[in-house]
Amino acid sequence: MRMTLALARAGFRRYSTYRQATAASILTNSMFGFLRVYVLFAAVAAAGGVAGGYTREQLSTYTWVTQGMIGVVALWGWNELADKVRTGEVVGDLLRPVNPIWTYFATDLGRAGFASCTRLLAPIVVGALVFPFYWPRHPASYPLFLVSVLLAVSVCFALRYLVNLSAFWLLDSRGITAVWTLVSGLGAGLYFPMSFLPGWLAFVMQYLTPFPSIMQFPADVLVERDGFGGQFTRLAVQALWALICLAIVFAVQRRAVRKLVVQGG
Image (tube, rainbow, N blue to C red; front, side, top):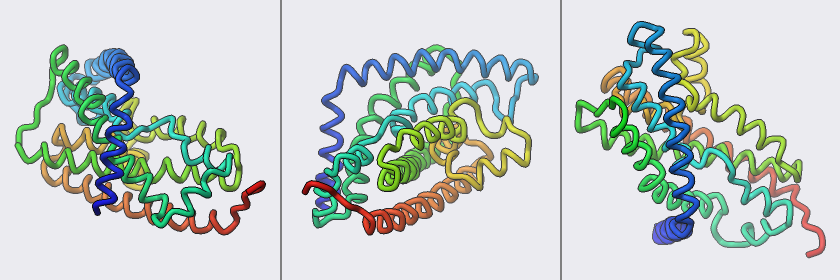
């Protein structure tokens, strides 16, 4: 436990040094947030005030939360493990007494903690100041939202780790990364909530794939979709996907290590 906390603190400190990059990300996410809000408001107006079960205020909050979640879950751009596999440096990770999954996971939690204080809060403040905003009616929704964010980070970490593990077989994982970039944003509900889709497809996407657990469900928990029943259902689905995805990560890594050959060392 002490080691996990130390790694998480190291991850927090590491990413807190990139202040200019953080400021640039906040500015970019906020600009895209304005664009998304106006597009979704047009959908609400066309639907007569409620679209996909979301009111105007809920959809505004949904938009700003998901914009902030991009940085918290680090949806795109993490290739550290794949690069180490390609260069052979992954051997150093595998020789350590701690499984690299836990090392990267603890560091990622620290990174997500810093992003929550900056890249998540800033867009929410911008959205709340400029647009109609849905503030939770029940105080319990705030801690439930924090739990949902933690589970979202866990699910996204596991999926990103799986994408990187493909380098054990392909060496160059850029093709898989490109597919992940395309599918994850759409499936996670970054562009629009899954409830905008036809009924059967929305059910399949929300409960039979892990993607909405990364972004949509934390936002749904905060805007209190379907009351407490809906919030706890989404948390349960997130927890289930986190366990499934992490179990798959351990199994795939065990299989990958068996075939690892490092030349020149």
